[in-house]
Amino acid sequence: MAGPPVGEARVVPDVPAAFAELVRAEAPTSIALSGGGTAEACYRALARTDGVPWAAITVLFGDERWVPVDDPDSNEGMARQALLDHVSPAAVHSMSEAADDIDAAADAYGELLASLAPIQLVHLGLGEDGHTASLFPGNASLDEEVALVVATGDDAHPHPRLSLTYPAIAGSHLAVFTVSGAEKAQAWARVCQGDDLPATRITAGRVIWLLDPEAAATPDLN
Ligand code: 6PG
Image (cartoon, helix red, strand yellow):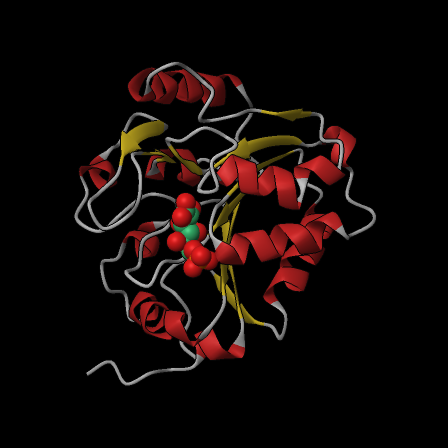
């Protein structure tokens, strides 16, 4: 199987279990969490994993919907219910509560990230359209070269968003994509052939893709 232009691809039978084991093995002192169904399954697996040094881990968010944390669409709300309410991290830095308006929150979260050491592990998903975090195809946020966090969003995805930018992710030590299900096979194949999708442009110190066999299957792209 051809790999992505950037990174190492691992086909695993159980993506959430592989993600949890990778976090345990890497023992990052900071982790930026993602959203979506694959991420939720990963966080439930991580909550059940022993040997993760949570007291030394600062939790951040890689992207967020601009909704209250108790909204069912909140990435932070999902992460708290699936993981953070069951472990005791050193700190949790909310994205959606970083300020009262979305632009101020983007600025405040960017300043927070600039004040911290580079993020050690950024968790990312892959959308069927090739988006990752809240970096959506054709969006101006893809061209951001300075700010670490932007306010963004598009009509195809719910809610205004906050997202790490390419510079923020590029400065991290490790980006881990988790990709599960046949519905992601076409996006994965397009990443592998170097199509200019938001996920294809991701760089970091290391990039690891964890895929199940269904997502890694090579579909007919015609
Ligand atoms: C979000 C996520 C988004 C997600 C992908 C994959 O806020 O929605 O950050 O980038 O990771 O859309 O989501 P699924 O795992 O649900 O397909």
